[in-house]
Length: 91
Image (tube, rainbow, N blue to C red; front, side):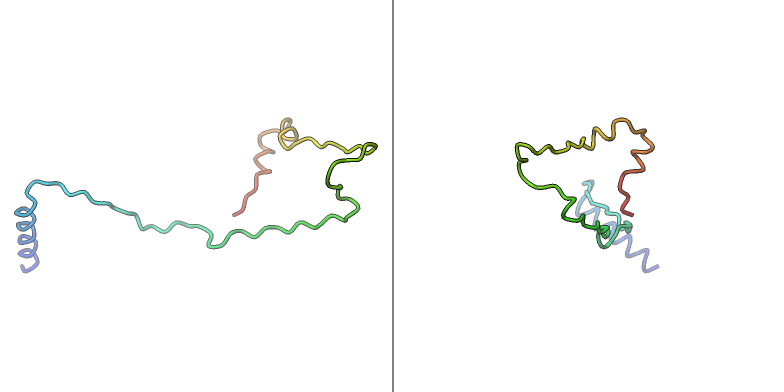
């Protein structure tokens, strides 16, 4: 009984104070989202020996350097399934 009278009293006070005005409110979802706490570890790439690495800077006049095709050119002839397999997956 006491709870019903409290609800009626509250409803009467709200009706008296606000009348027919609408009150806007914000509802936020507190559901947890699964995510990593820390970034994924990077795989260490072994360093190449110094003799294999290319020299920096402008080549000498008599030096001919091999020009490697860019990543987009390498991907042009590959099927979609293979390209999707090559995408990084850091799960």
